[in-house]
Image (spheres, helix red, strand yellow):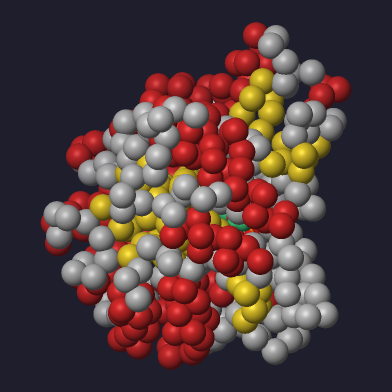
Length: 469
Ligand code: BG6
């Protein structure tokens, strides 16, 4: 390994969560209903406004009440950073109010203070897989330009309140989710079930504007703030060395990179402008919009990485399907998969880091990565999750190599350091944590927290700044 492959001093080791997947208490202290509150089957399934079915998100793991003891456990592992999201509906219950809900603001202030007390840097995602349901039903979601104003007000409110305590921010979690799960990503409902690309890309334009205006506001309020984008990275390999397969991979990658291209470079790439023309998509762009995008680009690139993808032009290859959180892809014959069929590819993480850094030359922050697996509590109360340790060890080793390649990597927050409700399948059977939560997919259990074997392992990784893997 290169002698330059070393984690820098101050590297932000930690974990990442999302409000709707762990807080529970979905109607406490004035919180409004969000899109997650009507998605009992996860982000890939249609919403159910009747709310008849049991919804695990409503209870989460009760982090709303247990945050102090949970943060104490993160501190015991030596976390340097904790990424969490703010539920928009705790701050603006309907999304279109002029004044925020003080109880919601106070809750997150308490979380932030608890983190700072434990020397943990708070990292905030402004919108993670949820938005006020009212904005969907009354305004039609993000295809409506009015949402830009509501989002800007919401983001400003957060910056004004927390800017002295929180330096790192992200505007939208996995903003490219809009293409794959438009209800979760943009509050878009398609009655006939067919995704309408016109609406999706119009919504994307509005989110880009909202994000750029948030960057503007954040920097005006405090120039020290670091505000990033966040994409679900989906690096694609050609199935064979056939040139057509290579081009198919390039095309597939562009669907993801489009989002970071606009947010980081500040303009619409020509490949997408041509795609819109070819497909009869006409985006309404008002005077001044393009200047806003150009002038307020992000400070760093945040991304999640769970797996890689494969593209092929051969229908036979396309039949061999693998699954994933947002996209099902073609099976890669060189990779093993998780119990949920997600293909495990640590080297892909090194490649993604290089790809993104070559493209943008901005600091990178890996804000999600991890293995969703079934854990068993042994009779003696231990949880031997060696499979999770193996997964994380292999990925961290590749991150280190990427640093040796010259990539400026500022942090790593693994997904779900404490078990939480999964996003794609809305279950608790699939666990990511170093901390086990005694609660099952039916919501039964004591909610007690138990340390898994990976708890001490990660503590050592952080304690040695990534030297002891
Ligand atoms: C990412 C999301 O796509 O993947 C998280 O940002 C999500 O919210 C994570 O939980 C893992 O996916 P899942 O479906 O296993 O929870």
